[in-house]
Image (tube, rainbow, N blue to C red; front, side, top):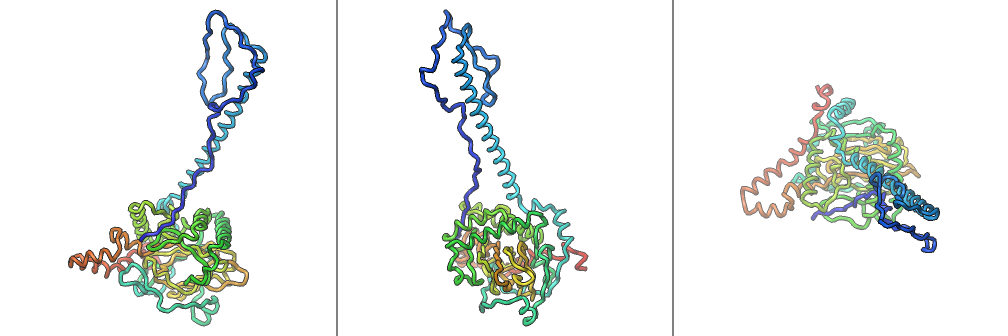
Length: 460
């Protein structure tokens, strides 16, 4: 069963009053109206030099041929003309304000809706990748824990509920400390020269710091909401409350939806989401296309579903809203094994002393400052965070897609149980399904980009 959390539209706040020309004009008491002028033998005709436009200024009041209005009548007409001009001025001002609001809304919507692979041209992508230097490792990605179906990772058999400092991991467990500045992009390759992880960094934008502060403030306010209290004991990833929003395969959450909807409308968080999606498109274009095609198929077949962000292909996201978000070593085994999860750090902490991201399969402790984003295959690569200093705050949020969603679309919008039951009646169909299942993980590995395609000079 598919679950979804939908977010309503954002209507323009500007409104348009009624046409002032159709509004009734208050009249003075009848006693103040002068008697009507006498009319000669024939009824005079109304003669206008120019047609009156509803948006133009009110023309002088026409006069009756052969008659003259009294001073009181002229004063009365002039007063009403002034009232109409004032109403017109106010109406035109609100009309212009509404137009400006529409233009602003359209510009912001266009920026949000622009897909990363359209915003980032091939030339810009090549330029960005050429400026990076890949970091080779001996990781054998093909040997990481994956379920026999190939759609999800394997669950941890042994849970490690320990929290570590960066120094203890280096001194006691022999990890390597990577002093990442959080800005420069560092792709990490495995033993097969596939790009399996990317330290994406931050966007080179002077407003990025404002986005970090804005998102941090939003997460801080969310952490005070009653719906997040008492959730820490239920989170297997660490002693902190967390909540997910988006499209998932399974049951949805309803208790904290109002707070989550406010978070995904935050301008800073939307910037981070689009930046991470651009990184996925740039360093794993095949995976990005697979995510995007699957999402579009889901939305077409299930029109009631809604994406968190129109510029991001991930189906779901989780907000970790504790003032000190520190994860235990864990796997997010329900995600697509060869897919990437985007992790963004927020808060106010000293990244030299704590808050590092630890990639256990690589033996790396990586400096991870606020505002930085990393892309990792979280279903098969064990990860955690290091301890913070007392009084520091750290929040984070992740974007990901459950492997069950891809399986649902692959099965033509049906469960494995349904398709396996159908296949059990036809030997040829059963054999074909078994053959696809056996090679799914291997085909998934083929979606990782090769270092030689991006940096041929580094792989000679």
